[in-house]
Image (tube, rainbow, N blue to C red):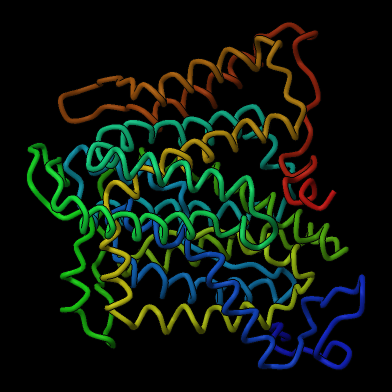
Length: 459
């Protein structure tokens, strides 16, 4: 069985001809391929840096498992779908909600492990019955609303945890990152979050040198004197060593909070597979189910050892669009680099030292962008919000998710925020549709149809 690990040399292996593309089963010379792999690692670093830190998980383990998950994905799709699997930002709100109720890192990874299992079987179902099974349960109005409430549910984390640690640094980082996203072009705009982190490190160091310690909250309820940038842990960390592993634990309340993210992950995978298919000129519909299942398998393996879940990364798809090199050999190289970084504790210490104010400035933009991806799903699918069948369940679910509304059943069981909002959107839509008059019902497009943001970037 071919596993997609054999590549033919594209042309002379040096420079593709004008207008030509390097296909997934082709490669450039190995030095150039390795260089492209390094570029893919840099592209995914921004989100992969921030995600495990925001989830309270080991960044070294996150990077290492992203490399392993990418290998699983490439083998499962037999090299037909070039993509990198990095730490998913969709779970940041889930982790915050679980920890707010006393959950530990083991509780977080246990809940997310179950999500990986569900995603795996969802992929098998799509592979067996086709993409219409997704559409039947999760039309675009539902998918968009769930993605939106997951993102906007994170707003209190920024407002109450990160921004108060250093409001002026947060403001400067927000402005810098926003300018980077808007004003930079091509590859540089794709790593704007990473550039914002570097800027934040620099400005925090300068403010420490000029003004000394800052008096503010620093991960606790009371304000204390502390350095904005504390690199003491970096000097103590070893250059080579294993990351911190731990086993997951399972609690029903945490699992119910995490399960709605399955919808976001399916939407992400469907959009990314479609985007790659459009860019490479290849029909990849037959690989959609396999891609979803492979994402689930990679997330299961990562969370089983204490790492975060993974998803296909749009940053790396952007790199391919800019370079027109779709070789999966470059992703094997990127996975190798990720494994090496995972074995460097000093690297993890640098990531863990990100100042709270810097995270405040970045998450203001990042969390909002996650939420607005839900609106993008509506736009691409031409969802009509004038139709009350669409408007009512989406409106109710989003407010419940953003406001963290709680429905208490017993002393030990309750639903709130993301979980309750998702249930309201899904059940509300289908129940209302069952009773709605015929003129309010309309044929919805498939979840993975419509113009992707990547196609728009190329237009």
